[in-house]
Each structure stands twice: as C-alpha cells, then as structure tokens.
Image (cartoon, rainbow, N blue to C red; front, top):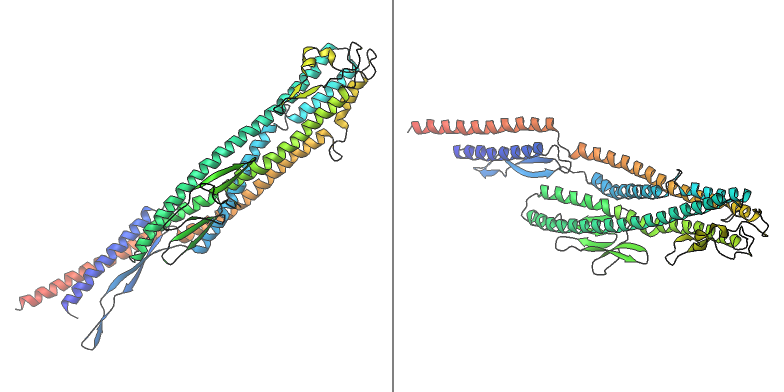
Length: 452
C-alpha cells in the first residue's frame, strides 16, 4: 500500500468520524425535544481498488444518517390522537352544559320546578293569602328566569363553539401550508441523496398536531413526500394545499374546503367534538327542555283559565304563563299587576282552593311517556351526566393508550445520553487513531525523504 493511499484513507476517516461526532452532538442537543427522532450513523467500507492483481481497501465512508423511527408506533399514535382529542373535548363541553343546569343545587331547575308546584299547594290551604299569592308569582318568576338563563347559556356555548371551530380551522390551514412547504424541501433533499431528517421530524410534528383536530390519512411516495387527506378530502401534498372553512346551515356546522367546496366527513378530533355538541347534543337537550317547559306552561294554563279568582268573579279565562315572540316564558302581565287574578277556586266559593290544589298536583301527573315533569327533567339531567361520564371514560382509556405509545416512541426513537456519550468516546478514539495514522504516514515519508 502506497503512502499516498494511507494519507487518503486516514484523511477520509477523519472526515467520517468528524461527521459522526456532529450527528452525536445533534442527538445530545435534542435529548429533551419530544418531537426529535434519534439519528444513527451507518458506516460502510469504501469501494476498494484493484491494482497489480490485488484488491486494496480504501477505508470507511459514512453511508447514511438514519432517522430511528418505528412506523407502526407512529401510525398507532396518529390513529389514537383524534380519538382522545374528540372524547376529551366532548367531556369538556358536556361539563359546561352540566354547569348551565346548576344541578344538584338550590339554584337548579329541579328545585325551582318543585318550589313552583309546592307554592300552589301552600296557596290551596289558604287561598285568600296575598303573601302566598305573591309567593306563587315569585316562584314562577324564578322558574322562568332559570329557563331563560339556560337558553341564553346554550346560545353562549354555541357562539363559543363557532369561534373555536373557526380558530381551529385557521390552525389547520396553517399546518397544511407548512406541510406542503416541508414536502417541497424534503423532495428536493431526497432527490440529492440527502436524508432530510429534521424536516421529516418537523413534518411529523405538524401531522400529529393536525390529527388532534381532525381525522387525517397520510400516504408517502418514494421521495418521502406526504399526501394528506382529511375526512376523504385532499388537503396537501408536495405541490399544493387546500384551505378549509366552516360551513353553517340550519343549526348545523361542518368543515368544508374553501369557497363552498366538499364537506369533510369528520369522524374524530376536536372539530368533530365541536360539531357534534353544536349540531346534535345541544339541540337534543334544548328540545327536551323545551318540551318540559311547554308542558308546564300548557298544563298550568289549561287548568288556570278554568278557575275563579279571590273576589268570586266569573272564570278568569286568562293564562297564567305567556310566551313571547322570541319564545321566552313569562308570567301574564295581568297577574303581575294584580295577584288577586290568580285563579284558586273551581267554583268561585270564597276560601275554596281546589283549583290551586289541582295545579299543585300537576307535579304528580304522568305527562311524558309515563313520567312526571320532574322525572322527565331528571332523565334529561342524567342523560347529560351519562354522556359526560362516557366521554370521560373513553378519554381516560385513550389517554392510557397514547401514553403507552409515547413511551414506546421514546424508548425507540428517543435519545439516550448514556448511549450518545459512549458513541462520543468511540468516535473520538477513532478520530484520534486516524490522526495518528496521518502522523505515522508523515514520519514514514520523512524517513524516505531523508534517505535521498
């Protein structure tokens, strides 16, 4: 082997181990970065030379800098992320809805319904009592006010959901644009034979963030370019990306591609939770509440307008409750202005409170599929609680799965400081040996030159 070949091998080796130390340093610097995938240097022998009938080795080369990644684990994380986000967001929103009803407290509608019908029972015992008449009005006002507050709170939650849906859609559009740009850089690097590991890590981070919001599907070509679709609708690749927007129609919201494009089939993720609560759960709860309130109004009015007031006048013929054009439950203004117009008697007899008793007994009447008003309301509240409990349980289960997958990812792709420091020492020793080889070759050359 000639001295020049020794110099070449040693010099090449210095560069290889310098690059290996660079990669190891990069790993150590990112040891606390959860989105970083450990990189591994793969060495290979250089192509040998054939000379004088012999094969001469030409040293080592840095073959690849490989990103250590378990695709199966990553696919499972991508699959479970939107499931967890969906259930977690559902749980949060259902908790807000539970708070609206204030159950079980003295401020809850259940207590106010009971108090309203009890006030009629008290009035039936002493129908001429003005304070008890005022108490009926006061109980009715508290009931109507709570119903109004609940409906207003539903509107506030709806408004907040739309605002969050729009904000999340803006995030999605930003992620897709960044993914498209990274795809272009990854394609360019791959075409030059360079491993774009850090670009791949950043793209994976964006895809994971995207999967928290919507259900995504990802496919890769031979150049590492990722094609993203959301709910069956194309979203991004290496040359283009799609903007998305909220679609609002008849009390429903959805995600669609911009400018009135295709509706996305949301199946999981935070946006699907927002959509389900807005389009399904709130209307369901509102309809059940409205049915309960409408029944209270109808049952009370049907009895009240057949009765007699305190001054033995003919049948009052007036409703106790009224409904405004906006659907608001209020007490009849005639009764508010004159509590004596509250009907308490079925025949006009002074001191007769039979009608008030009949009004009180509405609370025991089976009006909803063999349920009383209070039982129907309790069914509504327990239904909301059950929905939230289901979301809580599923979110907890999904979180356990994701935590386990994250541990697997960290174990496989994470940086071990101990391992990297061992590599530092190994590569440093190899670097020093290559430097000594150059020194030895130089001394040999000096010896030869001294002989001339």
